[in-house]
Length: 395
Image (tube, rainbow, N blue to C red; front, side, top):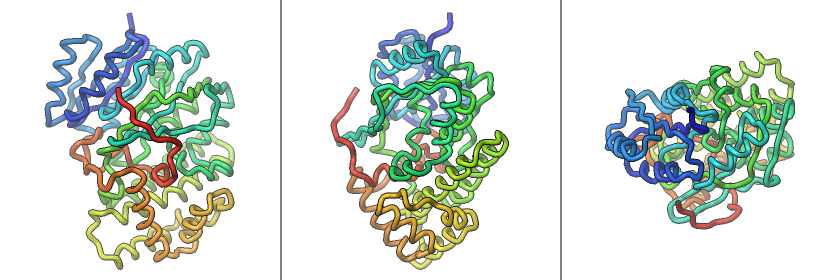
């Protein structure tokens, strides 16, 4: 008999965190699960740890493969999954004991294709719950799934621009439970991060929500998202990030055109491109980017003058942004590189103050197994605004 839920865990050199993750999964109140642990060519003791736990608990299924990156690992996990529903957990994170029982219950009760919960950001010394100003449970059906969620995944519009910290909060795959048939019947796959640079989960969800007929949002923080040792776009310079982001935008743009989606989707993508100027700027300002101030200013100027970003900024809906962001994007729009330079330096300082981190890992201990494949590369707006609460959490 097939399990109710399959949980896919992509693993590369995660010996320091893997036990914490596995224990949180093996102690789930929903016992009818399988844990598909995809060892993506780890060079540490991750595989030995998996083999030990698999001997103790037969619900762990090990796939041992050559290193191919987090997207390839997740794709193999989905192919091997036997469950009615499929979830994803990253190996340095952990989940609450009732997470999959509650999400599976909601999926069955409402006949949902996708269920989403909220999460807590864990910084080691403190925790910050990601607060969503929504009811305890929200259900969308039919065209509402696309109108309310799909467009939001493509990008924010109007009042949503007032909360830039939610740009990618909806796009994570590890906060969701998917009907297996939805993924397999539509041949949904994660794209290689060596191509698009980041946001493989958001791109995956754009396709998933297009085909979904029912979606349930549970406003309960079941997932613990580990940030204390997270690879950071500001600590690890990626010289080709802008080019890869451009390919990501092309993928989204092609999807919008192919599916003949309304004009609002074009506006949403345009706004995403504008908001990602922050992440691309922080990449240029990275601590390990060994370039003079003059060269960084030149790089910022080239970024702001690039055709796609320049055209997007012209149409950006600045009026909906908070004052501090309006100033940032106004300077970007008029290519005030020097002002942007000092703003980014200030933003980096605020991030350090808010998160308690100065630097991150550089690829030797991240889920993807490649320096350029950090699942943590985002626009980082969530680290710049005051938290909605701080508390210590543990499993």
